Image 1 (tube, rainbow, N blue to C red):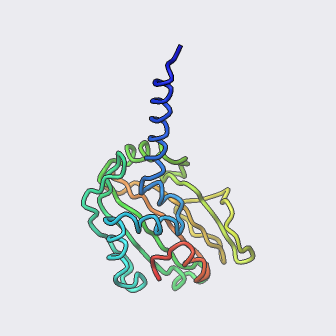
Image 2 (image 1 turned 90 degrees about the vertical axis):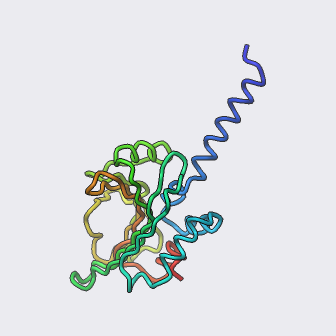
Length: 197
């Protein structure tokens, strides 16, 4: 017979492990929505990085990479915060704009996928691993699950996509990023990236 103390200890351990998973920066980022930026206001180190990245308008800068000073996020080390922007529409009308934000780690890609895969469901998408692919076209006001995500391709015309992905860098390390890409309204952007206001 198992004692109440043992059952209580096991229940507490399970509760703590779920809590730590829910509280990680990467788990918050993976939703690719405004909640990440709201939650990071309570994390001084990450909030400072976000504010510094936005000190100059991203549309002017295009690419910002800041040292995260080996920020420990559960069992993962985040080495750099990234914010990127590009306007593909200039050369390919109807393709839209691309926003990326998230982190780079110096840990090996396969190790990162294994660690993050314990927190969130990942899908191998021809190389990159993705989570939560969403799609929205100009005729629909709500985001819907993208049943045919294709990493590395542009969204269809007058279509927006957002998703979290882990990609392998040239040196074998990993980037953990969200993207909002394609054609979307200013209100769509503000709903996902309130930090840019």
